[in-house]
Length: 409
Image 1 (tube, rainbow, N blue to C red):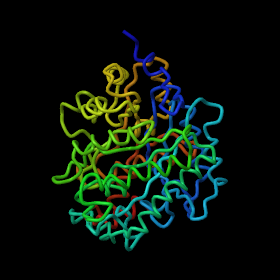
Image 2 (image 1 turned 60 degrees about the vertical axis):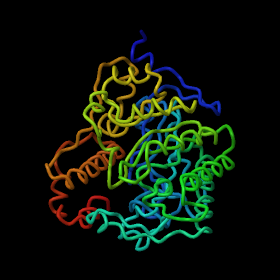
Image 3 (image 1 turned 135 degrees about the horizontal axis):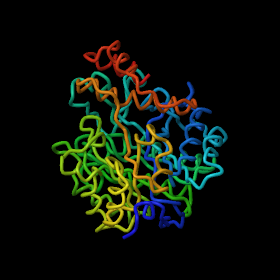
Image 4 (image 1 turned 90 degrees about the vertical axis):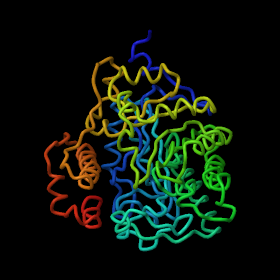
């Protein structure tokens, strides 16, 4: 039986012919390191230079917004209205001198743009969040017109071409976690009755047209990935059965890698396992990946819950997936992939401090890891002190909007 390090070090050829140097990938994390005009910064390039030296075969950036007027967070990087690859080139070159492939995740927040950034966000339908606390942060969206939908599809294509021209090796379309693509897929947030909604086939049209437009812009040799919810875990929402149908069609549409995730802001399954049996197997979405494997030959990446080399190796041996996604553990230990590839029996760590208050802990998880990314970007070590807890206490965890502003701004 192959050792874990041998399995993790094995290269992977994607459908388009691109080769990933090994089976470890950094999943997208929200860096919040754009400047005041939402352009990439030197700190962002330094962060990815550090991760590139860490040994992961693939690094997927945090969500780069395709529309600078639609942001999920105040310091998101966004492709400007008049695209220019020049500003993205230093970031793209941050992996120079390594074998690491650097991909950009492209996203549009839809209704998940907070009130202090967008007074009137857009979405497939004018459906507000059901949770009162979340609704205090995000305004009820306005339904997109048909022309606006076509314009956003164009923006995905333009954004993809811009980052590839800058030197990035691939792109990922964010179709999970309740952002715009995910909103189109879910019957809870897509209540349209035109050509963009009304049944499962029309709800997935937006995603498939985004994929087609991106492919037309970047060509056949550039890998295209999609991050997709296995389900959104809400009654009447995007189901596992419907998700698997989307997987089948994405394979037919010619994508190269599918990353499996799950949940939304209201049901954040991506933040932790839904079942204790899932937690004991480490990865959160392995059962779904095994089902997806039966209907597609697209390379599969699973992110969330991996902690040990043995667990990662077992998942690869099962044939259910091809790439191990690691997110927050690489903030705590940027050199973790190299240590795993070197055969160290090291466990991935991602634990942030806890207050015991559900809302506070959710915000704290985000805040603490964001703080640590900023420290790494500045060349500083991870700091485990509880400054983030004090920030939340000062913000007042009973006031979600104020807390969100303080933590995310």
